[in-house]
Image (cartoon, rainbow, N blue to C red; front, top):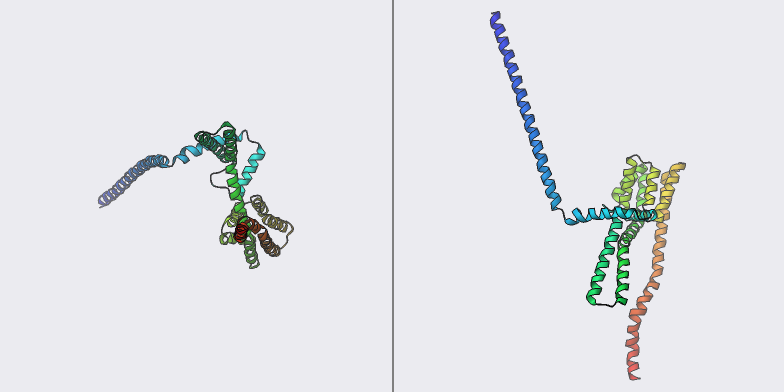
Length: 303
C-alpha cells in the first residue's frame, strides 16, 4: 500500500513539474514573439516616419532649416540691443510658434533678397534708365528689409489693443471672484477660462508659471514685461505691492477695476472728440469740391 501511495505521489510531482516546465517554455516563446513583433513595429515606424517626413512640404523640410542656419549666422554679427528688441517684439506679438530672433533675422534677409531680385527683374522688363533703376532698387531693398518688422509690429499692436479692451472686464470678474471667497490663484485661473483672446492666454500662462513653482510676484512681473499696456502694468505693480505689504487683495482689485472703467470711459470720450477733426479731411477732399461744382458750376457757365 505504501508503495502505491509513493508511486502516485511521484507521478503527481512529475506531472506538476512537466506542466511548470511546459508553461515556462511557452512563456519564453511568447516573450520571443513579442520582442520580434516590437522590432518589426519599430522598423515599420521608422519607414512610416521617413515617409511622413518626405510627405511634408518642401518649406518645412528645406526652407525653415535653411532660414534657421542663416539666422544663426546673422546672430553673430547683430548687436545685442537689436536682438533684445526683436525678442521683445515677438513676445508682445504673442510669441508665434516656431519663431525667435534668429528666424526673424533670416526672414528679414529673405524678404530683402526677394524684393531686391524682384525690383531688378521689373526694372529690366520696363527698360528704365539708370537714374530711375537705382532708386527703385534701393527703395525696394529697404522695404524688403523692414517688411517682417512692420508685420510683427502690426500684430503686436493689435494684440495689445485687445488686451487693453478686455482688461476692465477681466478685473471686474477677478474682483467678484475674490470677493466671493476664491483665492487669487484660483480666481486668475477662472478668469483665464472665462476671458477669450490674448488676455486669457496671458493669465493662463501666469497660472501655469505659479503651478510650476514661480512666485506670484515674479509671474506677474513677467506678465508686465510681455505686454506694453500701461493699465496692465499699473495693475501688476499694485498687486505686487499688495503681496509685499499684506494689503487685502479684494480691495486692491476693486480700486483697480473702478480706475480701469474710468480710463475706458475717458478713452471713449477722447475718440469721440477726435471724430470731427478726422471727418474734416474727407469733407474737404471729397464732398466740398462736388458741392462747389454742383452749386457754382451752372452760374459759372452762364457768366
